[in-house]
Length: 247
Image (tube, rainbow, N blue to C red; front, top):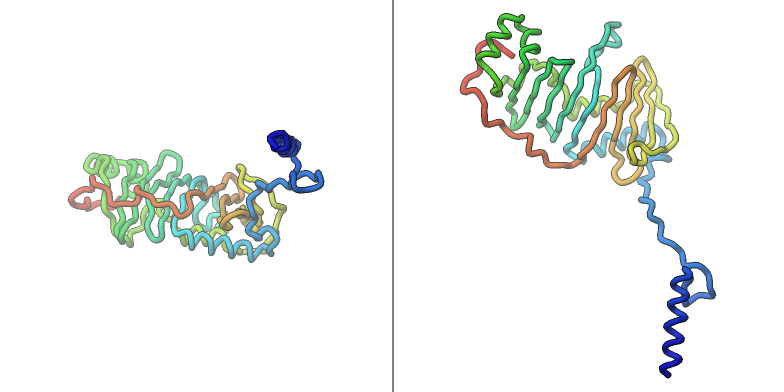
């Protein structure tokens, strides 16, 4: 009996090493697929894909946006657009991060219905002129300043509503072929028109918009969906009173 048992063990071992199932007639065992399951958007019409992306973004509640974008309607006005660089974390109606045009940079925090800004002197100069900006910067230093929620603040346009508007069709739509973008399976949807825009939507997991490309040098990436951002909180070093000259 010991001999039979040993032979059985050897037979099973040999079958496993050869990739065969010892309970079959020598056919190779099926290998489990390691590819992630698709979410189905790659086969949907272009408009449905963008609608799914907006819905996923809303459900996530928070995300991070980075890159460069021309804000406003500069293309329609025929002007020479200025490229904004942005790095903003958005959570519902709240946000924290910075926007800049060249060296003109401003940090902003929106939280609990209040807004705080910390601006470079070059930004202040655009509104106040060089002399007043220099004087105000001497008073403000690197402190945060509380500003009115209704005040127009330099670069403070990056909101969840703004991002959803970017991926809302404003022209004909074309669905491209699925591909990998930075290792992420995506399907591109191009919005044609005066400012062609291509939105890359994830085809696995939630159909998040992970990348947006527009004319010229514009391009935005979206990451950290559903994250909790400790940066979105009222700063400690806020001036006791807001200077009389607006920033």
